[in-house]
Image (cartoon, rainbow, N blue to C red; front, side):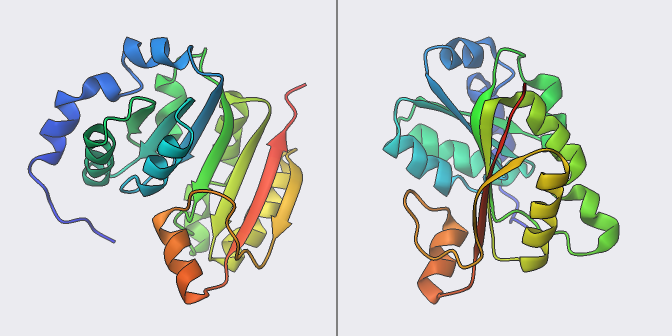
Length: 207
């Protein structure tokens, strides 16, 4: 869905660049946390906001391509005076270029990513081989990826690609209906209307 233009968005991101992963402050703050979580495609930040409140001693990084959504998410976090969330506003395939090498993640969340249903667009999926190669570099040993989606074809293709690329399936739910933690906006919406959802959790052994 195209976001309505907000003239304040880009100036807000610039004014709060200390919250961006490219700043030295991001790296300094990273080192004081024992657990580190990445969400790719954070949208307007509802999941990050809920997670950061639930786990105040965990470091969170949110990635979002759309600057307007990114600014909205950042504004929510800053206005709630939350200090354990940082941001990368840009294409996730560029993350490896700006992420300090010291930063590795315990888990990566992919919450209802764009399914890119056309075959010619499958390489854009956040579970395509190109992206999995990036995740392998930024995950800790036995770090996890958690995918939630309402798109069955994306789910099946992702599970197959995970296995092909050496990830271990930890859990797989083709009728995901009960959440054990904070939910994203779409997860909450779909759960309320009883829409079928799918969830898979995988890990990667770096040895």
